Length: 177
Image (cartoon, rainbow, N blue to C red; front, side, top):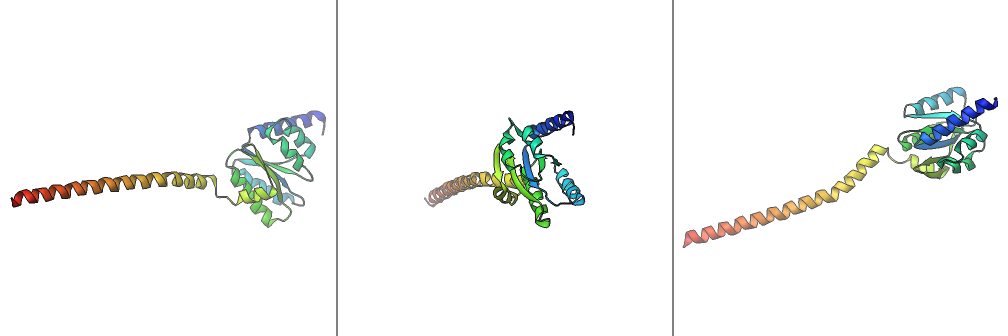
């Protein structure tokens, strides 16, 4: 590949690196074209795309970015997935696809400025989707507030019932006199 084409490819990879919320590196050794296309299609459905590039060019693209530490995982055949949306979904796709195709393995990932190795990526892939995590967080935040409102409502109700009982008792005492 001529130098100008390589420079353009490095610039494209750098732009994708800087614009992505998360980046995944995978070893795709021995995957055939049909399997790679199937994987690309699954990833593309989730606002991400998969690219195969030479490790040397990826190192150049990652240099000076948050992804620079990913360079140490650039050995052997490498496919890189750039994700612009929910990072967990792409990790799930790569992990699930890797279970059906023993020749695909996640090498590492980057999101929220943190590098995750293969073992951590597998654990991350087991997390529920982002929307479900946010719903769980919201429920845990609302739970105590809701309990407090119910408790205060019960105390208020009890106070009102006590006042009514006292008023009824006084009224009854007045009627008896």
